[in-house]
Amino acid sequence: MSVILLNHIDEVKSNIKEWKKDNLKVGLVPTMGALHAGHASLIKKAKAMCDKVVVSVFVNPVQFGPNEDYDKYPRTIEKDKQLCEEIGADIVFAPSAKEMYGENVNLSNTELTYVCPPYNYIDCLCGKSRPGHFDGVATVVTKLFNIVQPDFAFFGQKDAQQLFIIKKMVKDLNMNLEIIPCPIVRESDGLAMSSRNSYLSIEERKSALSISKALFEVEKLYNKGITDSNILFDTAVSVLDKKLELDYLEFRDFNTFEKVDKISKNTLTAIAVKIGKTRLIDNIILG
Ligand code: PAF
View 1 (cartoon, protein in one colour):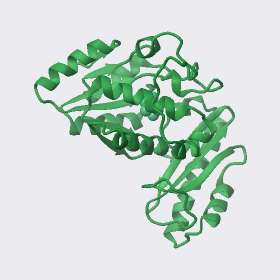
View 2: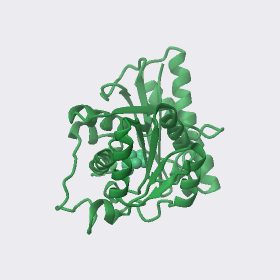
View 3: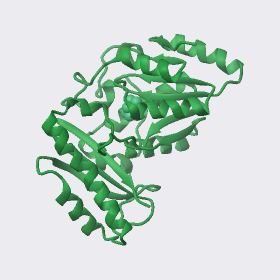
């Protein structure tokens, strides 16, 4: 069966209603489109675990700050649909901003009910330089969960803070689904796949390669027994291309998200940098 492209919430809901009558397991892969091999791995995992797969493609305005890349974020719906078709997804849900939020969509919209994750987990890492971002993410993900009613939802580990916040939200709000984390997919030279990689010039792409190199160096030293976060921090920074502007490089417990000084198994080493106007993130879980 071919994948169907739906733009309206009601259409999605009525398909889901039919599937639920037949007790079919539904998987949701929330995306902002410009799909790449990283997304493909999520959709394949969903396909393997579920009877029906919905891929949402929605560039969510309320998770972008006023000076961020909402307008220029790549929109490639025909290609996205094609990829979903090849993998065997059932529905591509691509609503407009108006369909999702009505008129006047922005983070300062005082008419909208937001889902706000706890301050502790958003006032750090990406949340620190992107105020309001995770409120926007938690809100749209909740809306998608309510529309699609999935049994499983699939998220990439590249957005480690997002994954942590969503898992916590599902637990705290007793949402009736399971979050399935999926490993980072990298280009053959190590660069983590991201829709934002398409912004990079050839020179910037070369500099960006030092992000994963820095993480792999941390991993190498950790595997040799070095656990002091200061040493690992300095080493990583020395590997980073000087053209990159470091936003953060932090070591956190992957399960609690607390900062750690001594690195151990399950330490998340997370990094964000700016290359020109492009902001990229990556991470590695040690051990
Ligand atoms: O990770 C993303 O692509 C987005 O933050 C998400 C989860 C689809 C919400 O807009």
